[in-house]
Image (cartoon, rainbow, N blue to C red; front, side):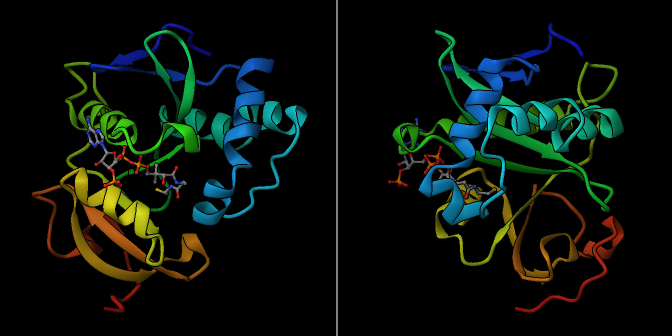
Length: 195
Ligand SMILES: CC(C)(COP(=O)(O)OP(=O)(O)OC[C@H]1O[C@@H](n2cnc3c(N)ncnc32)[C@H](O)[C@@H]1OP(=O)(O)O)[C@@H](O)C(=O)NCCC(=O)NCCS
């Protein structure tokens, strides 16, 4: 696992998860706040052991193995861990950005700053050190008002609600970076638009 990856923004660093107790304990803390559970549901990742497994071989380890990108930690410049920002890739040809913060770090634009930096990395050409994607999605439950607001603050365009299979067929709000094709089947979204 690389230990040298780090993206920098004005107030933040975006770094890789490492299989350490500190990172595992942080993941447990982040995934079990009432704010996180209200927005993303209960992941069941509630012990350091389970979190270490996820970092090594679970959704984090597997994402990097398959795609070379996935969930990252967000830290302040002094090293304090405050949340995560994700660039996942499922069945579609474009990846999707996501974010979560500890409640005490919300309301300060940190998710916004981290996600903008990660989108920049994802859409920078491979020759210039990025991931080389033409655009990225943002998916969130259509009922998650805080997340929808955060997606809009990122400048992503709302393309309506879709019953995405990856999210159990529940209505998901689909956001895209500007310039992405109007026809989302181009990216492999086969589910029909609900609204
Ligand atoms: C989604 C989530 C990360 C949003 O957190 P957030 O702090 O509201 O998000 P942002 O970083 O965009 O911050 C925006 C807020 O900071 C304020 N802000 C302060 N300084 C700012 C700055 N420099 N830049 C931008 N916004 C700033 C904004 O006014 C806004 O406040 P408001 O919501 O009261 O209007 C948070 O609710 C969360 O962790 N939820 C649980 C996980 C989840 O549901 N994730 C969504 C799945 S993708």
